[in-house]
Length: 422
Ligand code: GDP
Image 1 (cartoon, rainbow, N blue to C red):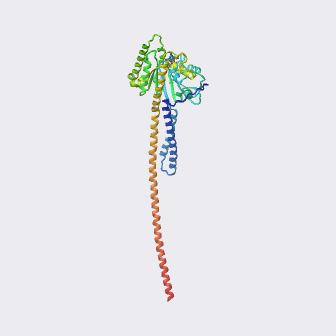
Image 2 (image 1 turned 30 degrees about the vertical axis):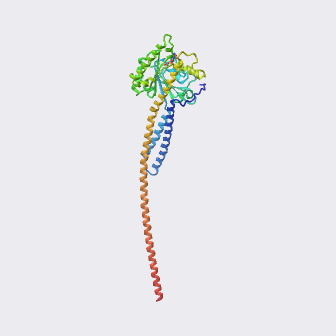
Image 3 (image 1 turned 30 degrees about the horizontal axis):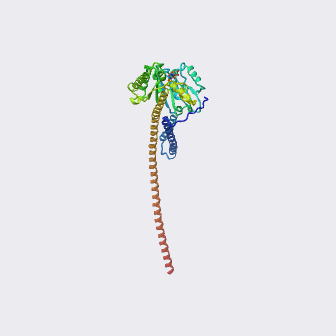
């Protein structure tokens, strides 16, 4: 990778909801970890010195250290995941490339994606590939090589190839979005495996349709299975290749509007009445008419400093380009909100329960220490009383002795003076 194009951070992006929440929860867990470590050291000392804390309690505290460390590790790896489905050649890879603003995934004839491909950000400007079950980083020099690597491999259709691409090259990768491209839903009967292995933790699904035809049974079936396995999946529908429909010579503008409204109605019905995953209003915000090929082309031009419409793009491009951007905005809002909930809600309640448990254990120990201290104080008081009693007794004795001596001296003096007189 020789291109040094850097993507300027966009702090207004809805993805920042996730980015900031991730930072915040990681910071909080950092504090919890410090607190747990400090408390464990203190508890261990209490166990060793005064035996106020028993072995089981000490071990329980130590288990919190491991628990918190494990959660922190998961948290650092958490990301937002979007998975793309649809028939072969509908343009799934092209949509991903358009969103990434670069031709990363091979697309087109001869480059059918025949396994799952995951694109995720890599640190340190490196681009490489990793196959399922191997830690080996296969260097990727360019897209051609990547395409060949994917084609030559005899990969099973439900296996996964991970493509690591420099984060700085794309805001979505920088903000922890992971893309999953799938083989066409028309090629597989293993929908269950697909969903179990690659989709269970997806925050958003994108169904990429070919706007030139109607939704097929295979495409519908796939999403029926998804919605049986996941409660209320977030599904967006892209009617792709809209440029081709819009430029059909025999289509009048009115006919095109009719086709668009028919597609829209079918897609909304699919989401609301068939899958029952959205209400009408939400579904209407999830159906788009786009051209991935044009968008990618426009973005490649923009990156070179040219206007997006450069490269003689077909009529209506601007509207389709806006619609693609609108899709991206709604997609970003949806994925970041959904990921915050699914990824962090559980961790935040576990964090609360760990700190709650520790607090009640510490309260308990504190109570025992107070009782112990009071006991010591009582013993001390008793001892003081005894000492004071002894002191009074001593003084009494001393006083009596003094009196006796005094009397004796007086008596002796009297006797002596009497004897002298006599
Ligand atoms: P996939 O198999 O679903 O991943 O589809 P690809 O992204 O590989 O696209 C298949 C072919 O359709 C490629 O030749 C693309 O250039 C082309 N294609 C993708 N999107 C569009 C589009 O929006 N308009 C047109 N005209 N062609 C497209």
